[in-house]
Length: 268
Image (cartoon, rainbow, N blue to C red; front, side):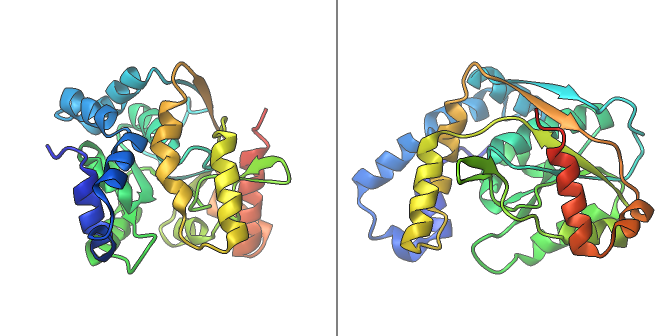
């Protein structure tokens, strides 16, 4: 089982830049992403199935969550879950465990950086956010949407940001709506309670003001997850929405707005 190694990640994702990064900075990055904590989870639970690994990791992190609205779903139903994205990878893990434990299995659309968590690769559907999509990733995505398993998506693509004092998702993209129609799936809106620290939102907003396109605040997400120690979060699931219901709403853009509104109506 591969352990997390910042050196290898930089070598794979940014080989031309990596050679110029001082060892001091690499060691700082190791601490920032809590390489030791991630590897503790891999060492202790890496040989377990993905959902058991998630449970073990959250046990180490002392993070808990409650679930509302999943009871009564057809275990054989073909669903696309569309959720807000307050935490980055952490909400993907929580929702994967919640859905998978109730419906038997799940696939989750994620940033391909999360593929470095080897124990979770079987349930991940990776998307390359910083380059051309890998043909193998595209094949896995296509087969998953055409297959029987429930699929978890985050239509914003990035975790929530703060704008004028309000923390909310960026604009939702319509790919999940297109997939719902083309692969005959019902859409279930989801809302995850929670937010990140002011530090994260301040850095994100500063980056935007400076015109820096690269999502540098992303390197804080593991640290933000570790900071949630002792917290309990609520995952709320809405009612399934059929393709016929979506068509009555209007075009794809209007359907996206409709589903997003349904998700945020569950905010308390």
